[in-house]
Length: 383
Image 1 (cartoon, rainbow, N blue to C red):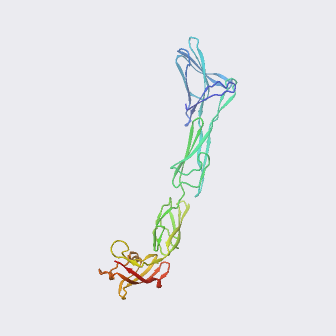
Image 2 (tube, one colour; image 1 turned 30 degrees about the horizontal axis):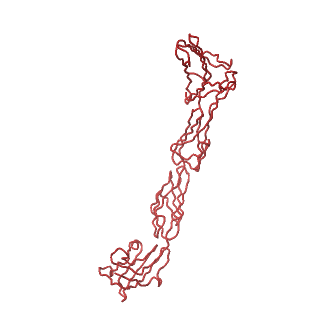
Image 3 (cartoon, rainbow, N blue to C red; image 1 turned 135 degrees about the vertical axis):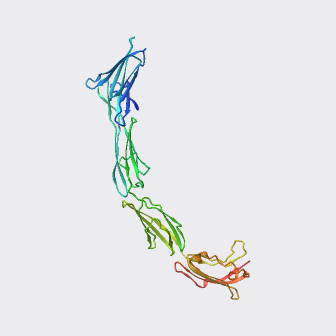
């Protein structure tokens, strides 16, 4: 027995007989009753009768027992039952109960699917039960509501799982799942239906590191897509790759780039993702007018502030016209250049404090040339 309700007879509202509900999930469950006398002194005699719609009374004999303290019935079908109880001292009473076998219905299935969505179809129904008004035999409905809930294992997006019996998700699962529909009635009985869903969907995703910096900018693209088998990377500079993980891509020309990844699943579903702003800094060149090579860790080198330069040459002269330092480089050499340390032509001889004259020429990755008179001037060396 899974639930107990009580009758509400229109002819006798104050009379309340128990209604026993037995859940029947596998279709084999039957009802059972056990009677104990509410008074008197045992042993007792028990006479069981079943309700008959033909006579509109408890007139179908079921079982008789004598000289016992209690009596039970099992393997009972739905219906009303009355037991008359008596003893040898003239005591007698009767008990009435109703039995219902409850089997809610559920059906879960796939209604439709595309690459963009999954549509589920559900059916939910509960039994309708009627007991009889014992005064006149009229049927009385036992209230029984229904509720349901969709779920999946592993968990996935299902819109309004407790309100929409035929939900449609535009965020389909990227892995195989089992969809379940649980139907429960207000009498406490439930039914569950499920089906296995093999995902056909694909999701494009990737990470970018770093998203910006000076040219040449090396950007690492890492694939994070789900269920992808075919790839197309468009890097925004007229170059493409069809590798799952293209690794590092180098941007040489300053500007902003939009990167798009398009992926396709084995079942030809397609998805794409776009990263809209990879920023390669424009070229720039700023020249200091003083440095202090005294090994205190602050401003020890004559070093230009630069960005996105493709080439640079630096010549530095004393006031007498003697060249004390020279550098020319591009590529890795330019990247590793750390400026003039104040020593004469990379020897251990230290240049004297004073004024020095520089001539700097540079070309940016954006083809801007830095070779005008503003890139010739004086720098002060202090020790």
